[in-house]
Length: 174
Image (cartoon, rainbow, N blue to C red; front, side, top):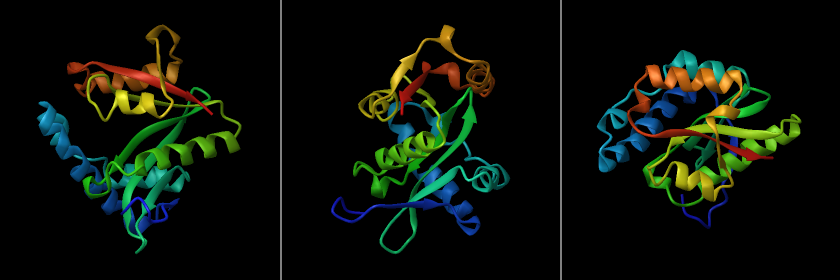
């Protein structure tokens, strides 16, 4: 996808769910470059979990001119906001505003639903994580200010071993 091509975001179709796993695997490979092979080699969400987001109307793809997904975002309602569970961009479409467009789409959905903010959890020191999200308007949230849903998400991440590297919750008002 070139920057001059019109970016289109739409709902994920059921038959595309395996493509989301492929996109996540491809996007995750860059974690090898920052000494995080466990993250790079981690399997994407199972199809049944991805299907739950899709069925809830909280899964979107950015598609190329042939209507093939090149990136995706899944979200859920947490603590009165829209929580970004995963956003992945295929490396062939990276650094072209695709991820930001998906985040902006999620913000529009949240605003339409009357939700005050987007939230996400991310790695502090990975350039395409917390520093990137800060450029997209997200701000760190102090752990003491987390609601019960976000505390639960952070606890599950810790159980999964993600706290081996510094992580934080970030919030973007909509």
